[in-house]
Each structure stands twice: as structure tokens, then as C-alpha cells.
Image 1 (cartoon, rainbow, N blue to C red):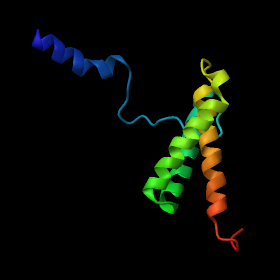
Image 2 (image 1 turned 90 degrees about the vertical axis):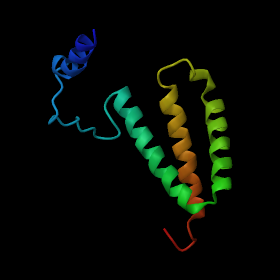
Image 3 (image 1 turned 45 degrees about the vertical axis):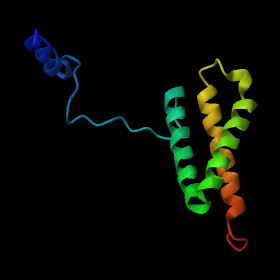
Length: 110
């Protein structure tokens, strides 16, 4: 039985047609379909979150994240059962992060 399991585990990648040298498809943001758009929104949110983490103290950043998540979830509550909901909430979080980053820039910076 162990041999069958081992065979199944080693043969699975071959049966699934995966190639160790295969490259993941390139996604051009903002994306052309829901999955790509969601991926791009996530990348943008990660970028703004990382920038914000470097600008504000940890405790304040945690409070900011809790507040924006709550506000964005509330703003799009009517879409909660839809497939677009995660993208809307992540986009909202990203927009609010970027608005705060803009406010944190020195006045002489464009």
C-alpha cells in the first residue's frame, strides 16, 4: 500500500502535465478578467501596505488596518455574496492606504 501511495505522489505531477521549466503566465495589470483584476488589486494593496508600514508606528498601523477593513466591508456589504466583493474590499483598502500616504508626504513633495 505504501508503494502505491508513493507511486501516486511521484506520478501526480506527470499526470497533471506540469513542467518544472514552465513559466507562469504574465499578467498585465489591471487585468482582463476577474481573477487577473483581483490579483492586480492584491498587488497594489500589498505595495501601499508595505509603504504605509514604513511610515507609521506599528500600533497606529494596526489600528489603521482594523478601521479601513471595517469601513470597506461596510461600504460594500451589499455585494458580500458576489464574486466581485473581495476585489472591491481590497481596492477600497488600497485607496484608503494611498490617501493616507498622500497626506503623510511633506508639503514640498509633489
